[in-house]
Length: 345
Image (cartoon, rainbow, N blue to C red; front, side, top):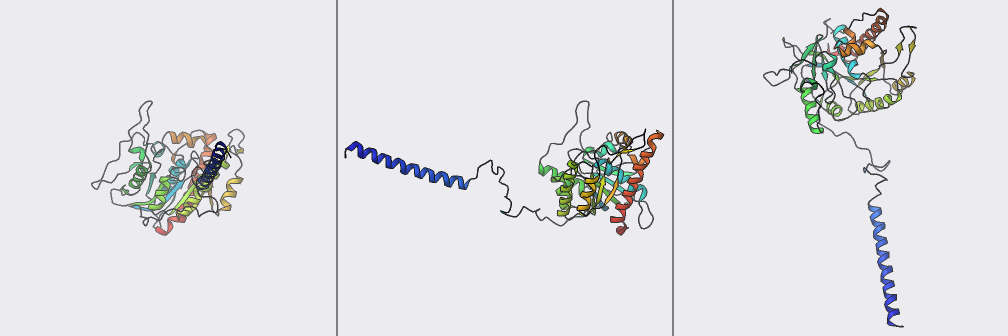
């Protein structure tokens, strides 16, 4: 056999051996690192390991000078949660009573760090910044006989064409949440605290909701939704979160359930039938606290800083719908207080 034949066979053998090693290495590499399109975030696969759980934290603290803490939440933004929270706080002050027959002293805490609405809804958007006590605690602002605190009171005032925004990451948001929860002095001039504190939660189940649920003692949550399935999907997530952090769910409120035409006096379910809403509540064993109609005076009153429960409608044709809103809100307030406040007196 010639030298060239031997050299060619040796080279061929070496090539095939090297190619075989490369194939083995590639197979090992692929088995160690799955393709990016299969699981780009590295999330646990179904059945591979248990899902992550909410970490255990320090024992929950009572919000200072707040007897009963009631959260008003929604999974989806834009369902009227802040409007319901505002009117619920006022309805509690107007209709509910302690075991001694005294009207409730109620506070309203806006915990929506990024999109606070309470200053506008309560007619306090042009108020001065909250004062501080000698101990460095925030002093709430007042309107309609309600003590209020919001991130909106602490931001620079809006100017023409410019609205200040909160652009913070998680740790800053958590710190601000803790200060709004525990560094507000809710006492009146006589040193009496609140009978009830209504907390307007941000939509979703993010940092603020989790911080609130883990750090503060909460007596119950009211969840607000609209009839659409796209809203109910997120309501189910909110229910799941509250149950994971052991916060009782007092019930659900259906907002904008129907519109009563002033011409024909017929109720129109313009956002769809309420069947899915009631099925969702029934499947999860959650009581329905009430159904609020879609009434223009609720929106216009909120824009003017006069919530519907204390507003007055001049138009006789719309007065009946406005009265229905007030009646439903009052019933919701009585039901909520019966569930969480009666035991505390």
